[in-house]
Image (cartoon, rainbow, N blue to C red; front, side):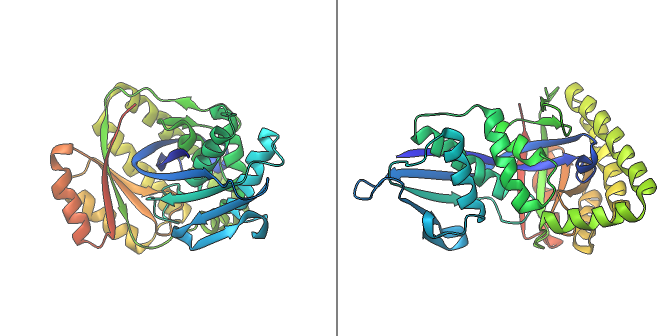
Length: 312
């Protein structure tokens, strides 16, 4: 049996603006992950692949699946990348602790875990850059016009500074910092939010380009704060980024309640993370106060919370 995994992720700064060429920062969440196990099926002919993913009620043979299904697509892409057209018969079992459609990189992590397990099973481990490139192709199915940051941070599994068209840069941390990730319980398909922002941008390009420029400036300041360990200043930048996300139009009442609760509880900063319109809110906190803040956010309606330390 061959097993591989990939972590979840959270966007720290720059969502939406990153689609329009501005930088963004994302960090992995190692407490959440997708895992893929591959086992040989000695009784079946070459090319026979069985795919099992109980989280989405999938139990099928690859040749019976729609080729455009994200799981089928990444399996075929990986085999093509490896130049393997008649692989040994195998069973692919997929599991994930990452909530679906919550901005935590569920689909991306599954893609990367499949790439890793399949290439390792066939004895052709792929470099990280090629893994990320393959996962990006599946991102197009999930998100329409993806920025590329999700596949980058999930593949490299380190804090990254990402700008479209450039190689990702691993961020060196001046000090670790603690985030509370809070789920509103409202699913937020990224493609829907991205398309909404695109339509708004098309209707008023001047205003939105200015908003994206402001976001880009905040992201660059945030990177400096992260590298210098200036955590309080980093929180203030999160609040500023949130104001811009509200102007971009991807906020929601549920997010507002959780953000206001977090701020009243004494966080350094709080903002939505990912597509918006629901999904997740993140709060930067003093680890000594994390438990009380997390309890306050739960009481305000968060359906799921996770405290995570961001380290190199």
